[in-house]
Image (cartoon, rainbow, N blue to C red; front, side, top):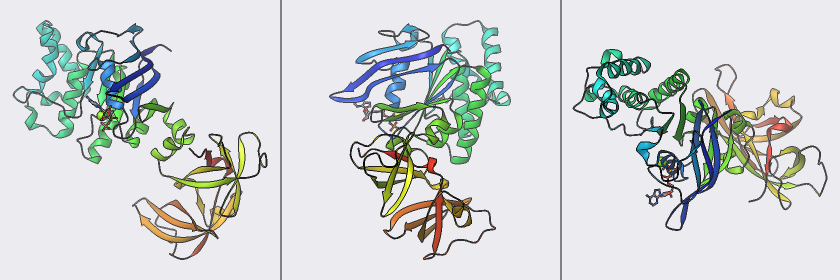
Length: 362
Ligand SMILES: Nc1ncnc2c1ncn2[C@@H]1O[C@H](COP(=O)(O)OP(=O)(O)OP(=O)(O)O)[C@@H](O)[C@H]1O
Ligand SMILES: [Mg+2]
């Protein structure tokens, strides 16, 4: 597979602070690639270096195989969509989208055809003569997208483009964006701090933490097999519990180790080999079974229900594992049929050995 964008050991410093710290990755042509991470981890800086609004202090950036060192933004085959759409308020939707082509002095009939195609792509054909203030937030976002796509960039860079929309509209636009990306086949590099957004849309996700890439993989790989404690905690709802490792070699086989937590001993998958005899296990809320379902699990124990948090389609129960009281959160589906667990009651909980992942103490 050819790659459209490649970072080779790229760093960017602001003063002495490495906003981007020696990252390498490549984005396959025609794919939807997301940079995901918390505020300040270096996502926008990475995107701005791709577009040529910033330049790296170290390393190389290649686009379509060509080194971008010293190449200005306007000469790169990229285009950017921002969180704040910055449409021209006095121009119609049509003229906003046509702007870039007019600047290039494209012939009028070509502009009309390409803007027409772009309007159709984003479903705004009948809004061509409106002004931005006569549009909803989602419609303005579509205009911004059409304006970026009409110039047919090789790579489209999107920096939290849905951040200003409400949740419902954001989810609808996520599906729209994915459809449009498939339809035009342009490579998308999408920046977000919203894990749900990244999981829904991406072919590949690079999870960033403090200027570095902690893990790069498909949404499912990252969700099911987080490579670091940070990734495990950042994506999805997970318990992070301190454990003691069994004596050297005991219970070791094919990537599994035996650990104990307040007297409760069980096998776990090893994600990262601990250096000492202490570590952490990560277990997702929804992988823990309760009651009858727990009794069929190879690993099981008892826990006391402390608290219930109702979240609509699911309920989170905060429990204390007996006898030591280690706190664990369990998610159950709220199907309206099963009766809720009573606070203070003692219940069975259990899981499969493959669902816990062991990480080192750092
Ligand atoms: N022009 C600048 N001058 C100095 N420091 C900067 C500059 N731009 C970014 N930084 C710093 O670099 C780090 C990374 O910033 P960046 O904007 O890439 O983060 P981000 O992941 O996009 O965060 P957010 O989700 O909040 O947008 C931050 O610590 C930020 O304060
Ligand atoms: Mg940013």
